[in-house]
Length: 408
Image (cartoon, rainbow, N blue to C red):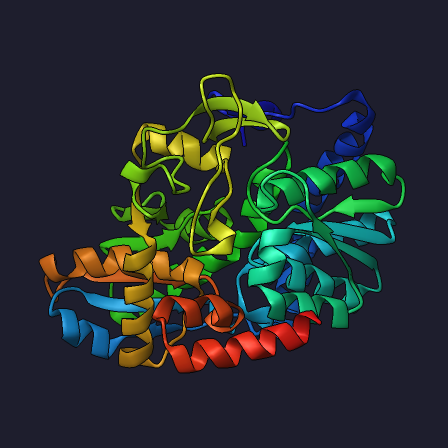
């Protein structure tokens, strides 16, 4: 990785002085662990025995037949423990916490899957745990809030700002400044100050390492295209990393929301609404106005409405190595519905962005072509949002009744 966590002009560590020593410790612990072959072996062993790795790839034969173009394969991170790719990162960071001798972890969460994964890791390793979650996300991701609390985590609802992911991150940093000696912040995506982008990408690289080997064995060749949704960037970087040196088109799919022309979206790299800035400890593309104030974002998927993006992805966007596209809320809901009906797979709304873009492009390809979609998580958590999106009065009434009972 580049010096001080820079990826050309992106990245870095823009920190208040009070956090410098804490980050120096984290950098040293992480680099020492990376250089220790036994650390990666321990990590893989835990992921194999506790988190169901390696996750398989599935040939989507019905979708392939439906579109009549490329052969479609799906990397099944939904089968990872806690239902998403998030466990890969938190287990790795949990091992670092043990090395540092700290006793408490904190985390931010949007869709809730990172929060559940962190609470699970804390239960496994015996740490105290606090999760910060924006009020908007608490309302639309109630099942995950329930499980975080059952796992023993304290879930703190963030009511400031836009009450979504970026505000939860701000509150997590405030907590960390106050409790540095005992606490580690388990940042959930490949953003933030160095070493988080590198560290999260390192642990998530297990996805791509598995997927490349699996697709060669199962499909008989490399994919022509690999698709992954992009919020902060952890599942995308984890999937893409193993294919960077191959002649493979890598496609990151951002949240097009209600359409780029409306301004109600979360596209940092596939729209002209973003600009380079510094916030939350690092330099990247942010959705911000001319005065540097962060814009409100929108997505049907709680995990994709972050205002910034990984500095690593920002660099790949500038070099053209990764292509970035946008999928609207409606396209995502349609792709989700089709995938459920044709394959019996239930992608998370975040993951469905990758499916939506793949479905746009697959028909123009040939049966000789292979495409691989990373299903970064499963859609159980989205039941309330999906019921609304499908506009089914019977189920909307049922969900409303249950949700009100839970909220009470």
